[in-house]
Amino acid sequence: MLFIEFLLLSISVLYIAFSRSANSGMNKQYIIGILAILIAAHLIFGGYRWQMLPTYIIWGIALITALRQSDQSHNATLISRIMKTTGLVLLLIPAVLLPFVFPVFELPETTGAYAVGTTDILFETDREEVITADPSDTRQFMIKAWYPSKDHNGEQDPYIDPAGRTGFAQKYGLPPSMLHYLDGIETNVFRNNSVAAESFPVLIFSHGYHSQANGYYALLSEIASQGYIVFAINHTYESTGTTFPDGTEVYFDNQYARTIESNTWETINPVVDAFKEGMDFDERHPIVQKALTTYFARDIIERWTRDIVDVTDALDEWNQSGLFEGRLNISEIGVFGHSRGGGAAGEALLTDDRIKAGANLDGVQWGQIVNTAFQKPFLFLSSDWPEEHEDLNQHAYVNRSRSIFYEATLLESGHSNFMDIPYMIPVQALNLAGDIDRDLAIEISNKLTVSFFDKYLKNLEADLSKMAKEYDNLEMNIYSGDSMQVISKVIH
Image 1: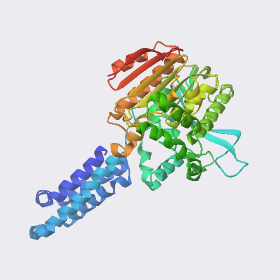
Image 2: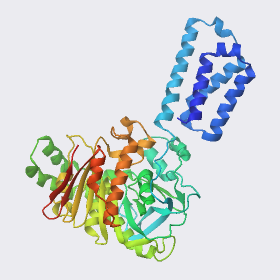
Image 3: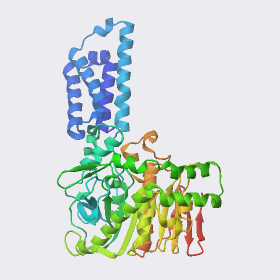
């Protein structure tokens, strides 16, 4: 709740509660004037939002009370006073809770040397779009590019595009109008500003399933501020929503999702049973191995990997003309993602030799990795899953990397702590975040991701093991080479 909103609510409630005393000590015009100034200040500086409806009702009751300035309350019965008090309390509860559950929040400030610019790119391919029924459809998706800039002002990027908002609302069964309050979020990211006059390493980002590229402002703006150009792919029909340049809005395809998920329990149930029955690793491995390479999620990973590779193919052209002319260091390319996008990042690192390093933020590594190993540096940062969670990645990453492999855990975190969700909905029971402070979680994951790519794309001195010693909420194992020797282990 914003400060002006707190004043509006608290003064309205206090006046209603102590109207008899206030009326005897203050002129009616003063009371009405104070209430009018408060509502005007709120509407001017904060703006109308639906979360404030109970507060508006309480303010209206306060205004009516001031206009009447009646002493009828002297003669009110006990039952009447109880009913009025009960009604006020019943209004006060949602008046406090709604702005808290759906707040106008502040995103973390970036810490890098650069301001952050952004632009939207329509990416069209000649690949068949397998998700739609029309066989003539070809694959196209939007990219949100985040980049370093020297311009600290301009047209501010609105928080989440229209289709992203509507798709998010549909996902959780909310009316889209409930998300209009996001207009009040200050992103401090500026649209179509010039790119800083340097050549920057390139990172390609893949979001989580039924999530979207615009839901990671805290992560992606920080990384861009540190001197990276990030191309965040919004995977059409499998993100919450996509807004195309002509205004067309496309949402998550629930029918297609149901189709590809049907009868897949036959693949995954043996895995669940293997963990429940307490099988040892060697006995369980072939069961998990089969699921990792045949479950429907593998097809999604492969489709998204093709999106990543197509973007990699386009980098040279983008470096020749347009906004990014001469700004892309295409000899230093990395890939990373969250959740299922993290799995796609790992798959892309396996399949595209141009990509030099990859990171998976809390995603299951479906696909071929279980039968092979990375040949390049890889970071896997996991949330703090409970012991009963089926840890498929201990099998997927059994061979780790022939180069170097970082296996880290963000203690007390949940799956959404890598996203903006804990800021949008700061209620742990609803946002799937952990007990860790949301700012601390973003700080650690951002710093670890940047340090990893600093080391392997910028060739800077960066000892990631020191981070695990610096933060009590970070545990890490570092494995090196063919022997998969643990060269560093930090456990709190």
